[in-house]
Amino acid sequence: MAAQGETIQNPSSTGAGTSAETQPRQPLWLRCEKKPFEHRSALTPTTAKTLMENNFEIFVERDPQRIFDDAEFEA
Image (cartoon, rainbow, N blue to C red; front, top):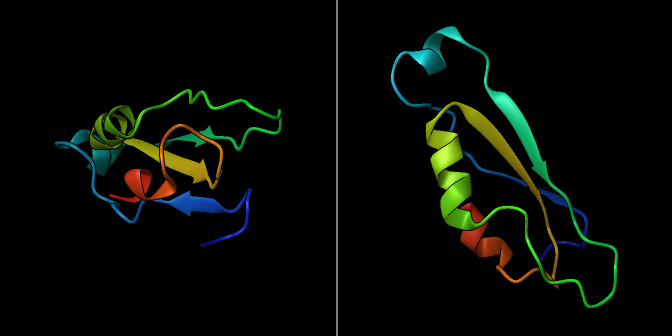
């Protein structure tokens, strides 16, 4: 497993429809939490996938304490 704070980028580079072909992808970052006992996540893996299908590029920092496993964001 990678070190805490390492960024996972989803390898999917295609977007939904023609908008992905004509517009640059909007980046969003899901940061690694530094506070102890903080397990919340601003994005779920399902929401991240939906955003990627709608021309967003999602970057997820690896975080062993997040409620979702890093592998769930890689799928």
